[in-house]
Image (cartoon, rainbow, N blue to C red; front, side, top):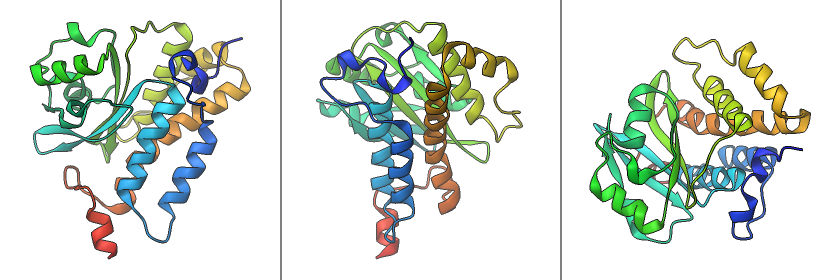
Amino acid sequence: MIEPLWAAGAARSSGREPVRSYDALIEIATQIHAEEFNADAVLRLVVDRARELLATDLAWLALAEGDHVRVRIAAGATTPGIGRMEVALGTGIGGIALREGRTVIVGDQALYGNGMPSTVHEALEAEGVVSVMCAPMLRDGQMVGALYVASREATVFDDAERAALAFAEEGTRLADAHTGVSDDTWALVRKHYDDEQAAALVCLVALINAANRINVIARTPAGSYEPGMFAAMAG
């Protein structure tokens, strides 16, 4: 039987207990609807839960600021370089993901080019990062940031994992006239996952999209967010 997505890779999760996706959604929704809305706390929760749901070693979130993409929040990092990473739009893993509006999967970051700065390679190497997956975050068809998960081990995606990745991308790309999840992708998902696993996958994609909706609800233009700004406004 195929493991649920949130349990994949548990052997390398250093004892972290997998978090069920619907529990993560409830936790994030509670934070969003809290009397004192704290954007920093919500974004931190998204990063933490993405890491736990996918059982990866690291996760981080970067926001588009002008013509660059800069890391704002990271989880699982043991060196300071991860939090200092930035790339120009259209370069590196996140820059390509944002420019092209698609998920980028890199099996070995040391071999990845596309203009990735040496400082980023050095930061990832210092962490021992090998594989990286980056999903763009959209608002009204515009790229506002990117969510990354990474592993210190090489990963090879099987047919079931590729079906889940296609489902996530199609379920996220709605603002650019995309028709949603296609019948073919749904058929692949149902081929590899039972009812409970498919439901977990739906919740996980909704979790990713929740980060996008935060900007819509808060009416935050792309690139304008600064850590602590909403807390300051509430005060």
